Length: 225
Image (tube, rainbow, N blue to C red; front, side, top):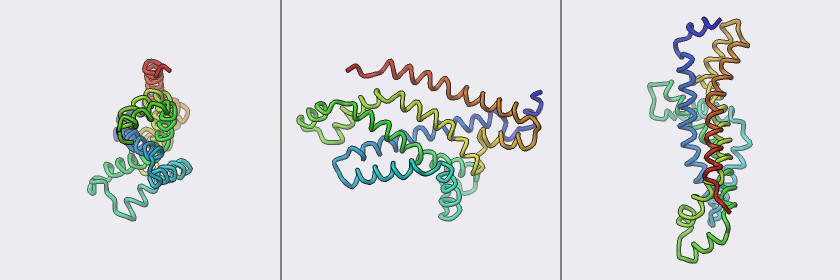
């Protein structure tokens, strides 16, 4: 019943899910960094930075991810010649472009999760830190963000799970991840339900443990108030 799986060697089933894992990991790291910077901008005392952060989040959250991913391919690569340091390796180039698109999109949601965590930190703590002579960046980095991150592990876990599922959009620009292989299998095999079940199970294996572990960390590291 599963003989059709042996017909696909490039990418294989495990290879396709490995690409999905790589997309998730690299995009998660980039989104966390960029999303944290955006959150800092949104609470910054500088009006220009606050305006940029607010505009970015509100615009990007309302653009479909497919549009952003396609733009990174047709716009950045084909029109502006952005190769992401992989001019002669198209697979690597489109993989990096997909990561760039996922980071740009997911960072907006990471930003809002972190900003909600910042809002849970008592204002008096920031005021006390400023009274001691700390700058805005020191107050944010030493006092506010450590507590904010501990309070938003749960929401960030939901963003990570959504990111894992959103990696399937990378198939639209030919990145050989799980959804790309599933599409090829469905087109060439007559076992649509079985193929769908296999890939659905694969994503459950990727996302369920992640959610359970991060939810446990959220309860373990929660700030006691």
